[in-house]
Length: 390
Image: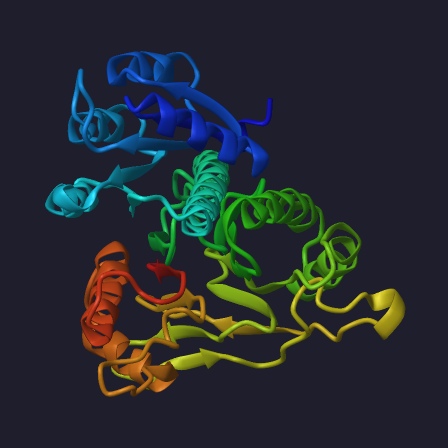
């Protein structure tokens, strides 16, 4: 039995019922026929057809009542009412109550089959839509589970505490644009308590893929940063390693610096990342923008040759404030479509440089939200602030 062609016919006129049943069977449909409306309703519970053709006037129960019951219990079922001229108002009422259509007596076979064909197409279309909706809901649930997993992964990746040092104070803000961001930051605690490494990066992608790449980056970076002293050499080794590990078209822009708090020295190297900034009281901000190799894993060094990562040093003074950030901070726009850019950020930093590191980081993000006119910025924002009190 092909349920897609099942039709239940209800008519207490036995002659018309047999004629309808015969016509429908000749037309290729599977038919169940009932003279009793109540019996027809009971049968629907056991085996729901695709289409119900029902006379609007029956002896035991009227067609409108059957229609109302069907709409409650079997909303997918297409109901076609049969009506005579005197019951025209009831036919119109049936449409308002959810009948698919009605046909009038005497029944025109061509018009009847045309109405049934439309009902079948509508039923099949709605059934297909329902299947697609169910699949979408299942996919959404899988995505929600993946996002939750990615959140757990990232919460384990990002540092939960600051390095132990008496001469450095830290502040951070990590604010993804969506559920899961692609920004990254970390602190490298060396054996020598006076040396601290800081890395800020922006990894391509979002969600679980970005979280997995972030995990890979953290594992590789921590291993290399702890075994290789010079930041430029770290970048070069890390680039070679990630070029083999990362999928094609995935890469990391990064800024890596090592601060020796005893010597008051900062050494840094960049991989296609925005510059760092040093705020020095009463003086123009110092941009850490010298040299920049390719983004990590952007180009395989075995194919395109090694990228020239360089490192540079700055002598720190008491009270200097280091600010590292990702591009989501300076690429925001205001309501007049004006971009903040680096110059705008530098103005904010100079105005707020008196704040402690954590308050400074939070204040800059607050300014960015006010500038953009929204708490949810368009891109991920990561901000790391370090004050040197040597």
